[in-house]
Image 1 (cartoon, rainbow, N blue to C red):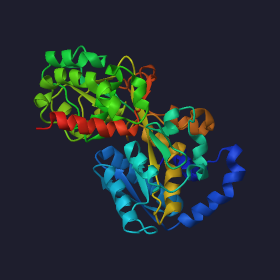
Image 2 (image 1 turned 180 degrees about the vertical axis):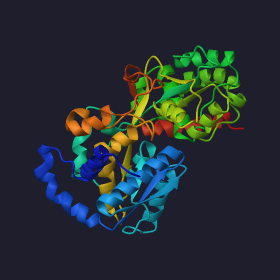
Image 3 (image 1 turned 180 degrees about the horizontal axis):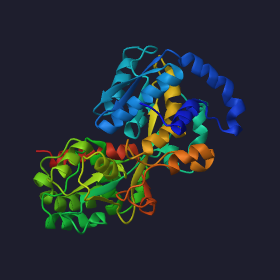
Image 4 (image 1 turned 30 degrees about the vertical axis):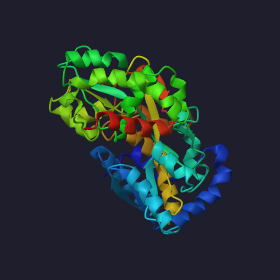
Length: 402
């Protein structure tokens, strides 16, 4: 791929971007990390369910190979729990220095599971020069589903729950979660969400729980059996009203976000949740969705979070993994990820910390009429504690699985 002069210059300095306040402290140690990383192969365990994601990771691999002589190998996952189980199994087998996972795309319950077992390398983020550019005003860059990051994972991707609909067939959408059953009754079979074993499926239930539970503040604390039944009773009553009018009467669910997008593309449904505010834009640009698809956000805010990368304690290529994590935080990589032609989505960086040339990478990003206004995305609800996702999925399965 040929880079424009602006992009070529940005990539060339991406690994050396150091804020002045941290330059003296970070320069020598980081040079040693770069030297150690040369020639390493980094195995990056990452969800591979979307072609745009895979293409972006492949692009990152080409950049770190050119800049740093690092070979990046994506290990495709259907679910991040696969990598978590691998690290736990290696610990049980005494495989403490030659693990097979160097870097994991991770957040939420999966991060919590490894952190509380002491199976992550770190803290390491303060050693990354580009960590100085992270927007620390954003709590979700510092807390992962209420769990403090503490330097054991590095942010690289923002997400927020939105809804996509086909305006060719739908003129009025439900802007309040309480209105979904009535909307579905008027449009039977035209709405669905992924199975609750998928992060997007359980996120939809969490979104409903936020609006329906008597005390939403309880979601920020670990779930307890004594409060779970009370907190979720309104959710199940609401879902019982919604379920008969879901796609295939709520008896079947698409396996993932891309799978439900195919239903929208094929005209089987008219409305779906997404965890990427730019998904409609990117998919329309790629010819995967009709130009009549639009995006909306619920009136009282929606759940948002940050995706991170973490390094297992037994990675044999920690230096290479840190270099990749640092590149993911570079303005070049963040702007590339924010480009709807390649992926799309908000950055984890504080743009005020960037140089004029770095800032220009973001102001030059293509605009699209299909992108929801930034004002609609400003009310972000924090993710519940990781224990809620697990309990919700278990309770839902008991109630609604034949």
